[in-house]
Length: 301
Image (cartoon, helix red, strand yellow):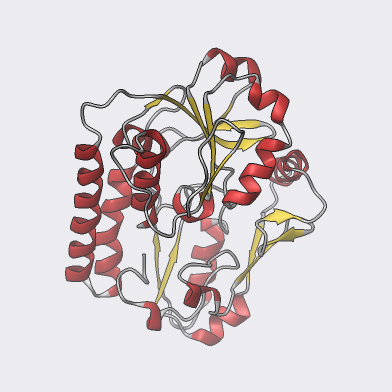
């Protein structure tokens, strides 16, 4: 969002997960993961399965321990005016309470703004809040208007088309149903989310529930993973995923266009519209996706 507002040169540091645009990845990192063997470069844990990652996260949170650490000495040296964080998901960010406590100890006493949207409207509404905090309200208003218009264009393009039944999988071991803004993205793209509820948190499901939902299309979007990792995860559970009976299965880059509440959710919505209605919507440029299974058409990126 900050780079989208033209403030990239004022961003002095980022988290270890910030990787877009490429300039962001080159900024100093102020966080690190406390999950053993976790690799920010590959968005997975070296030598660990998805189930083992989930189990470790549950163990740490169950013990009341944090998953990430903030480098307070480095932050102190940067003398920042504004800290932008989020508390949407404790698995995805430094504890908000920790951020506030650290900010209070800094000589510069920076303002802390937490962006915590549950749906697409709230994602867009966070732009004016961020723009005001960063001193660029006019830019924020223009960006919000542009993103809203692009979503309206997608909705209009698929209007009147049959709505395929869609299952969004945010994790596979155990299965998690896509939540927050994902059901809205599917609806705008001309699909019917068979299990997700707009604005609700992602939740676990068992395989029987997935089978009973009878989706026509499965979109695999393991949180924080790219399209190739998502496809490998589905292929590693071919029997279970195949038993759901979907006609088409796609793997997408969740980290880029689905997991993170920012401008690229619009691109993810356009990609969904293409996957569901390729006769009406072209694939957006530079948004990775891969087919899973012989029945799917060839991938385009």
